[in-house]
Length: 271
Image 1 (cartoon, rainbow, N blue to C red):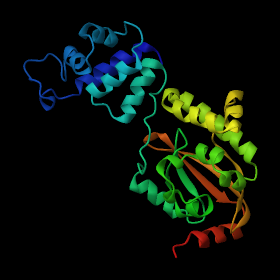
Image 2 (tube, rainbow, N blue to C red):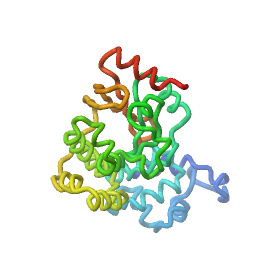
Image 3 (cartoon, helix red, strand yellow):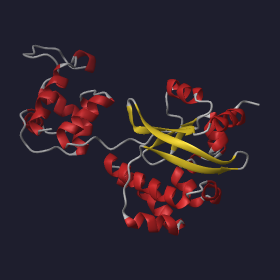
Image 4 (cartoon, rainbow, N blue to C red):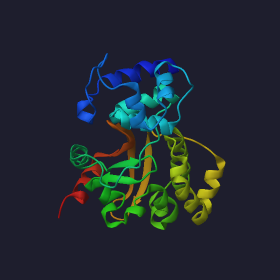
């Protein structure tokens, strides 16, 4: 998108704000909304430079400036993302999802899939929500400390995860490739640096795969697992975006055989 589109967007967002609601005097105003200098003061930037931004001058603002402008203009998450796309040509860095941060509605969607293990993961592969089928087939995430609810930590640091994944090497390379692509797209490299350092220090396998520099996209595929009760099971997985939460992805694992679906449903059923 051309930078010249940023100015009209800023002006439109500025003119919709009510000065009185923000504790500013109404006075006599030639146009509705806030004055340019009021927005600049709220964002702690130069009024002259803000004026240049609305005029399509002054070059691209930094991510920090855009973030301050989004707060000054009371933008929603969707509006904030659009602001970054106009100003920098990319979305803002994704905010880390808090544990249990999914909406009750999304949790009900997960719980309705009685025979399909389903997870909601963040861009850093932290598992932030799951259903009973996932707890029964993959692992009981509720029994793990929050820091251990990370797919990368489990895959590379937990011997049980290595034994469970029958195609461990292929899975490991794929997950690291998706992780690398995801954090680059989200601008989250600095945020995840401690996790990468930890994994490289604790796992020679991760260090080797990470150094290869491969990337991958998370869409759909097949996963083979060895389960202590179910034995070998084949699941097809699909990835879905979570509306309104660009930092989250829902992963659904569907059994390929009806008899496996029935066994998962029975295993996950409340006692």
